[in-house]
Structures are given as C-alpha cells and as structure tokens.
Amino acid sequence: QKEVEQDPGPLSVPEGAIVSLNCTYSNSAFQYFMWYRQYSRKGPELLMYTYSSGNKEDGRFTAQVDKSSKYISLFIRDSQPSDSATYLCAMSVGFGNEKLTFGTGTRLTIIP
Amino acid sequence: DAGITQSPRHKVTETGTPVTLRCHQTENHRYMYWYRQDPGHGLRLIHYSYGVKDTDKGEVSDGYSVSRSKTEDFLLTLESATSSQTSVYFCAISDGSKKKTGELFFGEGSRLTVL
Image (cartoon, rainbow over all chains, first blue to last red; front, side, top):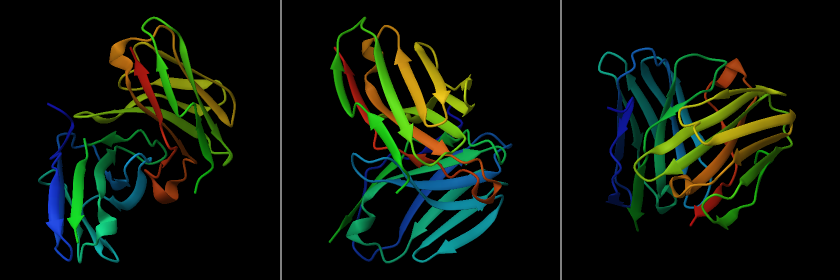
C-alpha cells in the first residue's frame, strides 16, 4: 500500500463547476500538506500549503485537512479552462526537511 | 520563475550507456533534489542534497548516483542505463525556509528514453 493514495482520474467537468480533489494517507506523522499544480510538459508548482488540520482559502481554491481521517481535499470554485492541469498532493513530516511524499496526481480538464 | 535549468531536456540512449543529467540553479538555495515521474507512481525522490558534497538517498536511489561540487550544480548519473530508467526527471530546489515548508521549485524536466 502506498503512503499517499490519490485518484488518478482523469476528471472532466464543465466550466464554472466546483471541483473536489482528494488524497488519503497512512503515515500519521505527516504534518505539512501541499497541493501542487502541473501543466502539461512543465514542472509542478506549489498551489496551496497547510499545516496540520483545518481549512485554508486562497481565492477560488480551498484546501482542507482532516488528520483524524488522514484525508485531505482541494476544492476549486468557479472552475476555469486555465485550471486544466494535473494536481498532485504532497506531504511531509517536519519543517526544514522538504522530503515530500507525493500522490500520483489527478488529471483535471475543465470543459468550456 | 525560479532560476532552474535542466540539461539535456530530451535524451535517447541505449541500454548500458552512462547518462548524466545536470541541474543548474541561480537562486543560491541550499537544498536540491532529483525526482522521477512515471505514470501510476507520481513523483518519487531519487537523491537529494542539503549542501555542497552533502547528499543522501531517496526512495528510488538504486542505479543512480549524484554529485554536488558547487552550490549551483547538482548532477544525476545513471552509470549503466536500463529501460526501467526511462522516465521524466525533475530537479527541484528549496531554501529550507521554515516560513513555507514544502515549497519546492521545479525545473522543466528532462525526458530520458532508454532503448
């Protein structure tokens, strides 16, 4: 079993829809949770970062962490065609050591 | 954009030949990483460096070696390439700041095909 599980999709939704992306994990030591976005043939870039449980909002994006369930989510409101990308969750145990464990990524397509 | 340059960007080679991928950064960041990305596996850490001449193994280090003789350069070497090493390789850097743990800056990737 992988430490981090992520549904690979692909996921296609119409423009303007709310998108929900999820990851589960098994290592209870993870404390730092991130979402990276990767456009085709590009390197990933950090989209959202949260520490421990709770919610964090940034514009149309909301990241949720539920450590009791070992479950994290990324919500995208009013989705746009420019949101079409692969989204990777990532986690780490402690700060100062960015040895991240990544999910496999979910490919998302927003249909105009 | 973070100043990270990977070379070569594309390479086709034959089984058994040595291959070296180079990562060059202009950010003076302490940490440098090599990941490989494969369908169904996501990004997996090969090796990382926390300073000049300080390196350590990651999750999938077998068959790979690294060197870092200068802050700005991190080399990944496949001593004898195998078809299982066909992948997209990403270099990443981080300054190790506690302010935003987990922020890696990635290069554009190097696509390696081993025939």
